[in-house]
Image (cartoon, rainbow, N blue to C red; front, side):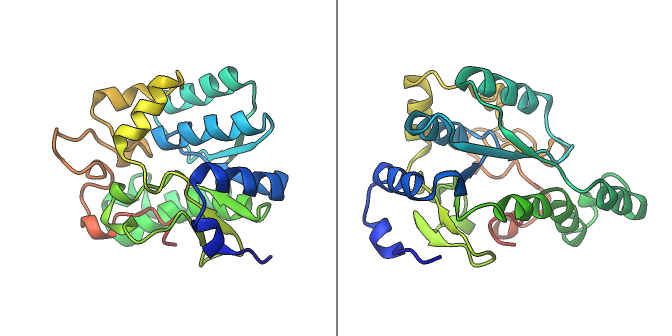
Length: 229
């Protein structure tokens, strides 16, 4: 698969989204964590094509509010979001060896958990794709400052499309309100970034928006591995 990445990066995000969706059909999909950003992109993609592919990774450790949002999103848009689960044998082997909350013990064990619960299911999903749509924004984290709107994923043979890369948080929340898009109520309770329940906590006003994720680790290393795997 070849694509002119530089040409795509000269387009607006909407132009690039329409181009990629038209060209790649069911080989393009959004990997949604049900974040504010992913809910915006879900709305955008389904406004372009009603059968656009949206998938999520169910780690087995999500908040109840996240599961409820999956149902609300499906009902609003008349879709059935694809759900990828981790390999149960790998989860069982990991927890038998290290316990259910191994991620608190070391970064190595936390990354092992993320690998089993997220990265392996993601790789299965990416095997069906040519274009992986993500809700990354540069201002989210110091680990994302050098990302582009369209780039080649260095770990797989897919194009990675980040349509909101230049958006601010205000841009995102304004779009949510203007289009009456369902979102996770935890965002209104101090959770700007929501992942697995035991690895996510609310943040204080003025704190970095990613500081509630893996708060026991150094901020320049806090990625689950989906984007730096």
